[in-house]
Length: 556
Image (tube, rainbow, N blue to C red):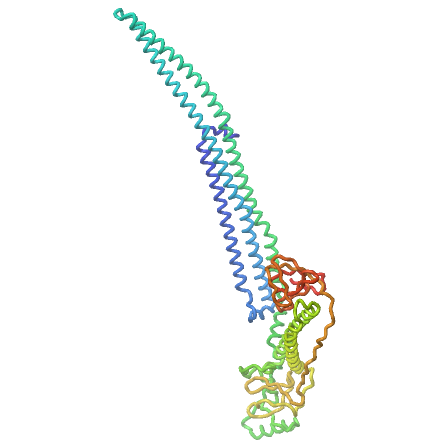
């Protein structure tokens, strides 16, 4: 099966067919290109969707994600972000492996097709030229034969005429001989050209055209194979990301299975539990017998032995009416005494944790300044140690303030949790009376709080038992330290001109040793060699920590 033998006379149709094949290939390239654009657009929309529903920092939404169902939703958003990344991978791989590759191949195919058909047209033109030569020699031979025949007839006529002179007869005879010789020459020329044409025609139809058409056939078959391979690649690019997409979906399923309704219910209890007991029954007050009611109230007060008038609610503590009393919407007291016991304890614990974190941050900063000062003492050329004294004093003062604040809140927290003894009744500061009447404080969970008429809670304090907080002194003496060991390496992302004391200049792309991580102040301590070390902005370097190094942290 060869186009050269089977389609020897279909030059124009083959030219149209091969052009159609190139058009099909370009159509497929356009299809893949549009698919990549759709994948990119889909990935972008998925990322925007995931970003849209991500919790905003420092907002109430972040508090919602303590519930397992909300954490599962957050995991779903993160997995969808990774899912979008796989669609970007599909787009990138299809562009690199199909679109770009086929576009280059189409250009090569067009050039090869143009060359093959150029050779075919050249062969056609040559055979056409030979044919024209043959036709021209044939017509010339025919014309000379006719001229020779007419000259012979004229000579015979002149020779038969007795009135014609012998000279005219001889002239006619010579003219006939000349014409006859010309006809013989034309015959020989025609015969030679005919033989040559037949040879050229045989080579054209049995050598040149089959060879050219065979090349065109091979070119077309390569195009067909290439588009088939591209379709396989198209499917393979999709198949390659299926395992990762499967992992993303598995992550969503795993997050969904981690939802714990009991845990979420417990969190609701922790979030809103007041710590109070439900209010007791209210005694019936019989206004038809005022005398008996007065006697009953007096006997009730005397039976308690405190000599103070009692509330009208059957001796129940005012604090137990908290759910039915309007809450105070004024400014929140510093000790959160307006909250129910359980909520107050949580708020105080949260405040203590925040203060401890701030103290740790300040302590880390103090350590960093102290180490830098120590470096300056050992290497005066790097900076003046005295320049850090002011900053060190300021940080120490901040720590003192935070420590005092933390101790104050810890004292309030200890009171709520019952770790401190309850203060005497004689030193308590009474809150406002309900309905203008006084009464002893009930035995509530807070033990030292009473409900005011507007529903807020007032903490009772006494000057005699006020908690005294003393600031601890800090030891400013530091022992000489050996040079810090390297805990990893880093690569400079940008060039940094270290012009201030304690800093070091780095060039973009330079690899250095990390000897101290960022302590939260935005600076990382690095070393170039034994004599050159200093601080650079953390954002200027990419850090690679050694997990086995002492003090190295692992980030997930």
